[in-house]
Length: 471
Image 1: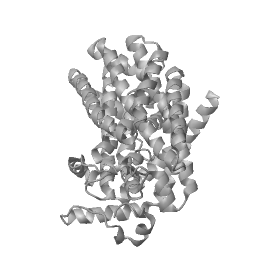
Image 2: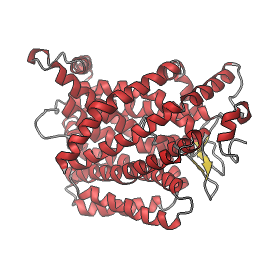
Image 3: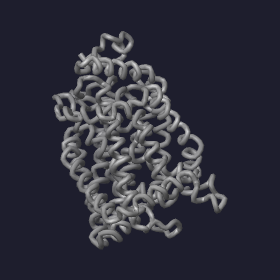
Image 4: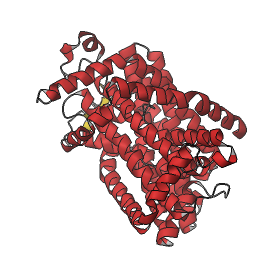
């Protein structure tokens, strides 16, 4: 079964998603006129006024932290290590590329999630790809398919991946028994996820900024210790990315292909651009400026911070350490720990274990919130269903703590890939709505006014969106 899953994952990523994700990223980059570069500083301007929420929605800052909690996890530490181990130093270059063009994709999906959001029975904003597929395209079947993929991927498989990395890190650093760590994760996760979306948002708001700053500080220390090696590391990344290192061995094509596949695969797993996952958090926000596109800017920044900043920090630690040895068998979180230990001493393993705990634990609770939103899409009145699903999520956390890393990563790749395909199709079909909303926002901004969404300015859109939202 493991070989079968691996073959399907390689087919999906090697012949479908690599081209699809790059294509849609380039499409939105060009059609939105390089919005991620032209309005780079505006992303930070929007964040200045992002702490105000409402009775119906969390604040934009909380939505940013919730989406970053899901993004910043195993992919940033174990995933980067796997990408470098299998794809070489060049994999980080392709992670950068997929992130930069993915920022435009993230803008599109988050803007759509905002404009098509609705209210649940408690009056909280809910939304995401399933909702814009139903309301914007009139295709509930498509929303159901996406919801099922997301529930399997984020609610179940990804949480097993996060748990696996946590227990592996604690085993290396403290020699803790996997079962006991798994049980502790189940108990901690239960406390948060039973509190609902606002509890998850408050938890993310408190934990995510602190953990990211601490991890970046350590990475900067490592860079400072090895500042003279930085130019050679960048040369190594570029040579590996374009196959120059393999030229002498006559394996240019294979080396470049591996670097691209691993970089794009792990890059998407980390920043989630195009998957439609972060859009679920974006829809829960009460944005300021009060316009759907403002949340698009917020989530673009999330992609940038996740990959260009945090993943680069991990890659720097590994590449500067000299611990990357293809074929050695040392990969995943163990490689990241070994790299930091070689730079700062034995306490580096404990630091990585604690960091991955916070990174991955926040991912578990944020992933659950995405799955909950999509479960509510499938069945609006589902108190009993939520209880059963929460138990299943906690069961997968325990399974991940005790399972094998290779099979879990492969299942994550497959479920993520299927989800991305469904979402990308919807994004392309709704691209005209994205363009109209982006133009409306930017026109108001250019005129010196605070962009404010007027639903009546677009008759077709006015008929599609929820009557109780955007009044």
